[in-house]
Length: 426
Image (cartoon, rainbow, N blue to C red; front, side):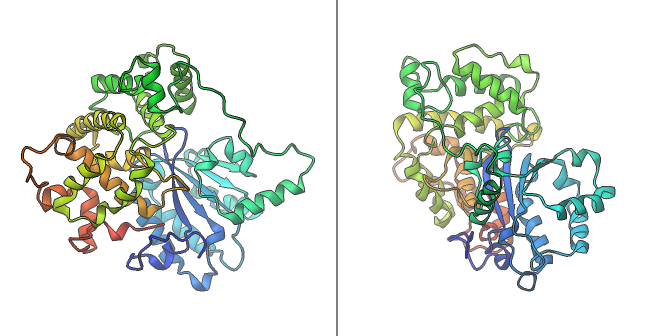
């Protein structure tokens, strides 16, 4: 089935809906916000899909992310009389998505809107707050969407790509969209973003820790450790790009000038996300996905084994970053960012596949692995005291008490594979 995640388990509580691939997660936007996509073309005929189940599945999935700022991309193409929900269902759905879901939704992009959308907007306008309405952006083409998001990060269905191409053919008089990237230019000697760790080391007198990482961590350690929602909140995309330009030009950056502690936090995440190869490397991706099948008492040991295969430079940078995030988690009483919350924010910024995008089901092991690195920083990065040392016991190492592990327990996942079969979604 098109769009179905091959790793999706038939034991998933919403397998009947999730198997269609209607909902996807696609990394972060330019403001550091998670992107969720909804593709109408993947909705089956109404008689094959229980729309109430669809609503429950949407809430089930979004519940994992709504504590963070996020953006939603709605691909309208493919919605027709055969799969269109009733107006009553739409009204019920809007009421179901209460303030918890709307508060941290920072942008809603409606792609390829039709007259049906305009009619809906008029019908629901009395129910929609002015503040929420300002979050909506209509994009008549993927070219317009590219003005706001990096579309190469989005899991755009083939049906939508073909439809967009058809629309372009109908408007041949307009200049074609820029579908090809310009030839790569040599990086500036002072460039910090989009270049390899080795390049940064060579250009910075052999320093292992890249300047952007060191400077943002230093600033946040001094002034941001107790900021509520640190790394969870977004920042002005224009400001982030301005800071990137200053760093790339070798100019000093004073974060005090921006009056927003979330700017350096987003800059740090952006630096990680723009590395040519993820900090945890492409080679480690499949190994990390297997962390959920490891006995809970041995997971920390397995983390150490996986990290042993990292290049020395990557290991040093990762150890530095995880040490800082461990400090952040220790202030969770104030900043509300424990190791589980931080893992949900950083998982996709540390590792992604060499081809394609990480599916929703892959987020579970990626985030669990990241959580272990943060929570058990000392045990993971420091050698054991004795050769026979075991990792913490099941309760300790599996992170029971963390949101990730509690979700596993609620669905009765077996000890040998506790990772959250309940969260396996495409």
